[in-house]
Length: 131
Length: 176
Image (tube, rainbow over all chains, first blue to last red; front, side, top):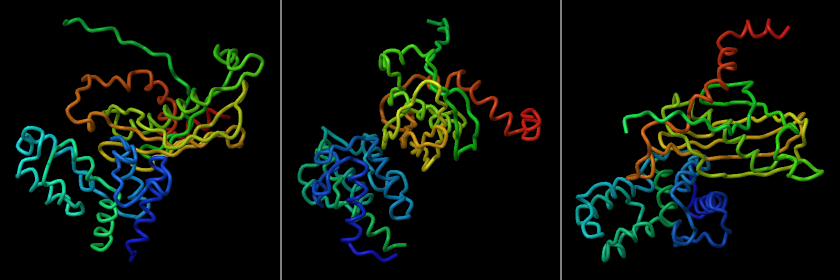
């Protein structure tokens, strides 16, 4: 089903309002799920379930929010920062996330800030277009 | 060390029996509310009503067992999120609650369920929950080996309905 970016954003916004109990106007493209919208780990799973339902798609584990596998691989992290190998892995895994600022200071504590509303919209758009 | 700790039994069961059970899909339980429940005398004096939080617990047990059975009780199923809990009417001693839970999604790491509670066909509550299979989540954290969620007490709860499912004709003749 063809859907433009605004329509995708509208549905994503609705999902996040329901899943996180936030207001419409708090959900902006640049809002980070954890930092700005107060999401916790279980909320990510809830969001994935709701997105699957709202868009009628399947979202494989770790495809939309691939943090866990990165954190568990010692080769990807050194001194609390992602290594070049880790960064490459991230680029491959999440083409839907803009890494341009993060690359300058790949502090793993800031990894969570990459998961923004815009990143979800990018992911869903790509997924719908591929279908 | 080396000595096995006695199995602790927590008597914290807020459903009386299963009346329907469709593996991986749907479960229905009954809860009979009675003034023999001590807490109702304090909640509230002269106006006993079942606390809403216990209705959530009853739904969590109904849906949690449904989710646990779907993976043959191999996962530690923990209530992770109350997605929705809306209450429409008071529940009083003498009322029989019917709790219906359905699995909406289930994956290796989690499950979400929808549910409603009715009493004599009157809608009492709508409760949607999320469960985590904790061994599949929270990377790096360790949990005890044994499945502390599904201890023996649930087996007896499920036994009757599973028997009925296996022998539908027998249970019918029994009802006559």
